[in-house]
Image 1 (tube, rainbow, N blue to C red):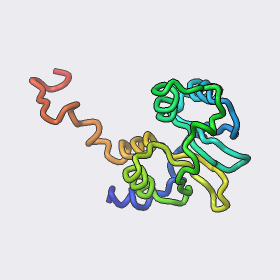
Image 2: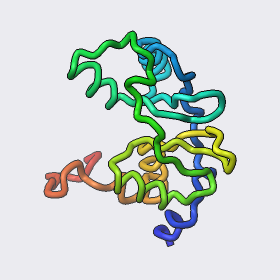
Image 3: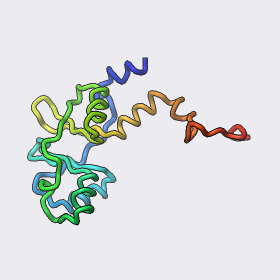
Image 4: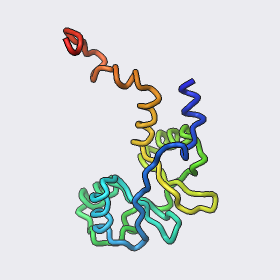
Length: 154
């Protein structure tokens, strides 16, 4: 029954926060500042209302920190271009498969006309699974081989 929920739940059914969206041509250091302020791990880079790229904390680490890149450059030069996307009508299973297959943590959402309408992140899926499997999440010890000498609260 719970496995069926993963297959049938539509992305639109999740309570997804509005993503950080920035316009193409924005300075990367400004985008990083907005990401920090919003406590988010990525920004959708848009031209008008269409997502043309995504800038993530991985991009920051790999292209700026590791290579001593220039954070004053336009975000377009450092973003991942033309990211794969899903629609709010796609299933949660589709998002999990795409994340697993390509190693994504963030997938932009678009409407049928291609306009940017949101973002699904790995943390949204983890939250959903934690609600779907509460006993397994709450009752597991931190390590599988961990045994407690006495019951909690004794």
